[in-house]
Length: 502
Ligand code: ADP
Image (cartoon, rainbow, N blue to C red; front, side, top):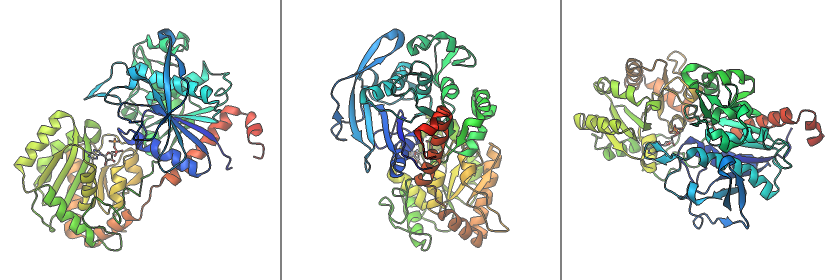
């Protein structure tokens, strides 16, 4: 079936307007890919302070939106309209000074904002009021993470018989299970859906109001960003307390792998690297390696394997495991460069290691997109020892750049990197299972040995990886299928009326 659908994305970030992580990439790229498949797609998100209406050519729509906030009463907001660059996808920005007129998206420093409950309940409720204002009747509303998890909840309760959204199906996508939107019980009165929903099989989780839990119960269908993560979050190790709900709803849960923007991440045309290269001619990669060593003040040695890391320096990314293994790793004939920022202890720790091993380890604490591109191009291997990884992007960039990933076999890493097979020369990287310094060290040792002693193996790994593609076109096709399933489930017999030819 290929019928035109009306779709609305309700989301807390979307590139290029505002991006804090992988969610922003998805919300920036997927609507465009869906539009290219003929659907009417729109996006709603807050007009954060950092989004400059002039710079993005946003237009203020006439009138204002009334957003009922339960016990708080009615709040009002303006609505700006813009377009996702390179498309006709309308993006609606909610203008509310008290909620969004400040620096930061989710918080400042490592602290979340104290009014995040109201800020995102507001976004969720305003999403539905916006449909009324625009007289827009979506077939489906796509919510993302806990921030808009209240959308399906509202749709099943307050808006159940609404003229515009009452018949719409909903999807809730999980991009990171760790963050669930847990707040004080009284948030129920702001939601205004009734305390009968404050039960273990509703929104209650350890005597708090858990927005994600509500969304997981109420969305027509659920998705997450890899098949591996879809399985993992049904277990206690990765479900963060909500594994039971996910097991209960496993029949409605699918994993759809994110795509990569190959216009931005392409070694043949990357403006941030000193020499372009391709799978057919890798000579430019050697130049990138020398430049990378120079930038990090390391000896420019072509005879050592160079490992790269670009990461948030937090526990999720295995930063503590790397820290525990690093002396052992640096005893090998290798070099290592690290770009990242995160927990303060890690800044000091790795800075100190760089001072101890000036010939072998380079470290840049901070965020730099140009340097990230150079690391992808100039490294021989890329390290991702993640504790959990819903999808992961850097291993995908690495494959495209002929930089062999060394990853823990979890979530999206396990779905996208195939372990090297020395006998068949199959595989695209090196994987390990146990989240321990010993397992990480052993695998790096195997990779370094391969680099030094198995030329045919390295060549195979590089060319196997460079041939892989993870596109948004393919992801959009899978989401489209999921949307049809959700709409069919929601409408039941009415589906035949909506799509008579099918
Ligand atoms: P997550 O979203 O969990 O941080 P992903 O691998 O999905 O992890 O995406 C991380 C993205 O952020 C990648 O595009 C990566 O290159 C980029 N990134 C992370 N840290 C830095 C940094 N310090 N400098 C530049 N880019 C970074």
